[in-house]
Image 1 (cartoon, protein in one colour):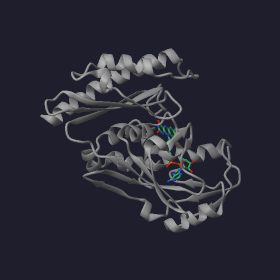
Image 2: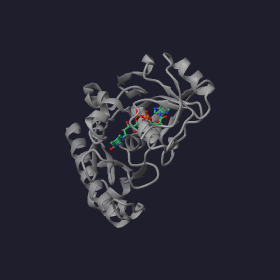
Image 3: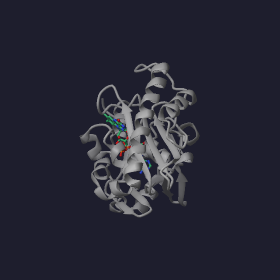
Image 4: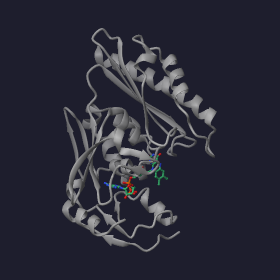
Length: 286
Ligand code: FAD
């Protein structure tokens, strides 16, 4: 199918991009186009104009520091996935990115675009949420930082306001004595997941379990984060934590899976991911 007619802007600086967004109410940012172009072609979206940011060099950034990884709006999934520096500071990024679609899509699609798109079945929103990351937004009115917990409002709905562009996203570094893991099930590799879990386990100095967090995708309208520290106990009872997850979630059925199956599957994935995260925390602590 062909898209409806739209205006097209190709700014070369962030300032020009923000001016173009301000000048075209209802205009959409075009990043990797891996979600937006299919929506246009299926005529599920008909914005009056696209602001193509692919020539804005300052957005093509990936900064890795002791505090975490800042991913610019034009950094493709594949670049972040392959970054050894990013993996050393926050290994959960690469682990989750391997599950995002197929390599050709990861070569074009952007991490920040995935966050802005706010698909509840997408991997990166759940990772940002479980790590307590942030999104930096800019418009002609100025800049602001939005915490992950306030960023995702509903399916395909983020806290970005009209005229705002997500400039970057910040994923905090993994603290010492923590481990992380990612697990998901999709009907075919590369499909959106039926359910998925990003798990983070922290140990204290005596190697007892001190913190347990899990971020879930595909089971709620926005990424769901659960604190499972109490449920797992200081010895890390992952079966008990998984049972707690099954009690707390309320997944919707769809054409791919019923609610009961999704609930069961999510518990299985949670137990698996928590086990793996705890094993990594132990390795890093010893
Ligand atoms: P675009 O398609 O360019 O934009 C998507 C939306 O976000 C648009 O509304 C756009 O205006 C907005 N946007 C983009 N960047 C910004 C910005 N900087 N500021 C403000 N708004 C912005 N994704 C997954 O997570 N998991 C999957 O399993 C998965 N499977 C896929 C399978 C297929 C066959 C396809 C085609 C895509 C799949 N995707 C999947 C989507 C892919 O990851 C996209 O890359 C991602 O969702 C959006 O990134 P993008 O850069 O392509 O954004």
